[in-house]
Length: 234
Image (cartoon, rainbow, N blue to C red; front, side):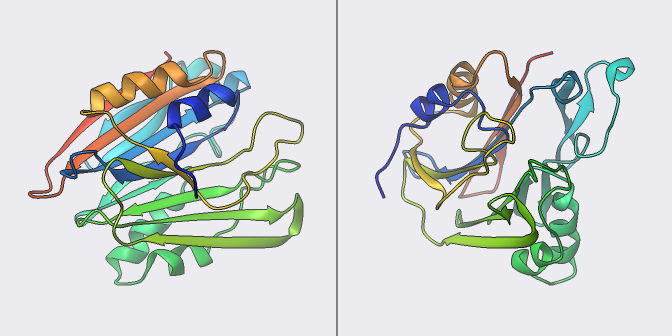
């Protein structure tokens, strides 16, 4: 698979929806996790990322404008031991509970399906970053918009190469209904030297009308310490 420029992919797509990137820094010293959200409606755009003890959660930027918290308010990033879970919905908590009970990432997601927001049936995208830098990604989606079938895809990367990652997002682009992501997670370049630098570049590349919030974490593979960067529209 061709290695793509993450920033160019984002600039070319006005609405990738929600996205996860997992990978490794160019110097090989850090594992990288990126998560962003976008929105078209007032309710979807009315959000910010706020830090929590074990990750981040979404929160209404203006509580008075929040009309429906379902599928909007959740924990996108949570730790489970030294592992890091990154998802686009409340399946973060499902994965965490399964892992803490000694079960697997795949078993957790077998208990879930795509989001009940027809006609889009937004895919559930999920990632698990392990302490050694290896990671897993998954997408659960309808069969070309037909909710009678849930298609379950799992990808495992045991030894990610320095300076690259895999990018998985909910939508191919804008539309009505929104077209679900297709194919294997995209292979992308990760050459920023810090979470702040990567956050600035990704934030600039996201569509200015639709971008809502962004989270970036660099995890030191030697000692497990991490540095975060958050960007919020509001």
